[in-house]
Length: 487
Image (cartoon, rainbow, N blue to C red; front, side, top):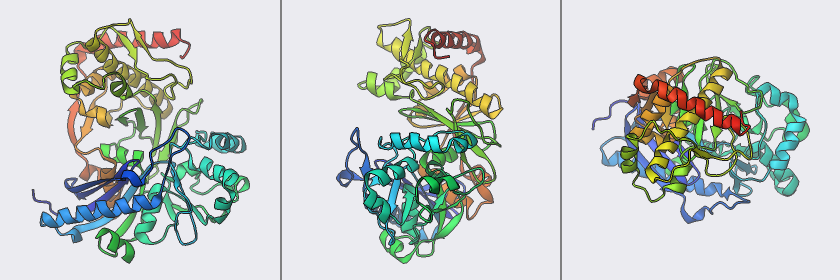
């Protein structure tokens, strides 16, 4: 395949490894590389999840070097790479010394420590929480900083800077580990409305001068330094562009760009991000907003329900065959809420909400079809809650995640929600990071970069012949939630 024009490098640093994509200015993937962390990164424990940041950097070096070699092998000059950007997990914390080296393993986003500290922060920052519309949790980086202060005071005192996973990699690329973007900085308490670090943070935690400078995603923050060029095979002086969290990057890769539309990632869980012209708040704090350049906001939330039920209840199934067989059993007269464990985050907040299947059925394929439909019924309710917060109605959905690969499930979701669903050609976070790299250098901002680079692979339109059936099933679904006291 012929790849013309400039190339943009997106690097996704995830929980299990690094993905790198070289993407053309029109959105074609010219090369890719995937490098798992392997044994040098310990597995998560129920009470602890830490990773050595140096392992991220080594994996970045291997992934980017492999990508550069693949470009060479395809007779594509790596010098056509015009910019690089990085995304990473949201809320992961790295404490750095004055030389920019990690003082200890990074505390990952899903590390449970910091819950008590998060509640102390919420008590001290009530006005701020009302202003931004969210409350701090153990997954937030600021709660992890507070935990370090109380449990590892020597490390806290020695730390010259506190950064996030993507910031750390950007710092290794540029040689200056002192900048973040306001997508990653949200969970450290950055004020997205006034675009500053709020004074109350330093009153609570003495971190003045130790939090990074914050810029908008897609801002050029430096260039690849000599050491990084040797490590990765990139050209010294290549522009480095501020990235975002992995969720925000995946949202951009989905093609979302019109206010009122949604990106929904259907993986183990069900994650929502909408696009709005104003910050959105929920009275129960169920929604929080990321911010994009140009004054647009990404109100979002996440349900514990998603695809986890597949790996838990149908681990041995041939899923394409199950999908094909289940299609003939939709609509299902069984109303399901396919939660694997008790407890939900959105569209209701409950530590005890159980899943249900009404009426119970024994036949395996019937259960499978009901669960496919049940996720879609839940998704419909989620859009209603988000629409009310955003002040919109009926927006289209740009769907990513493993669940979006199922045509049967995509069509079911379109039919149940009454919304058009689009599946992008490449919905990876690394692709979104490449979009940010292009938005900050070649294209005239993020909107143009998305229009030029992101294309739907397939769209799914609601079948009007099924609308009445799904309206009745949705009413039954709401009735079951009310019966259980959750609506």
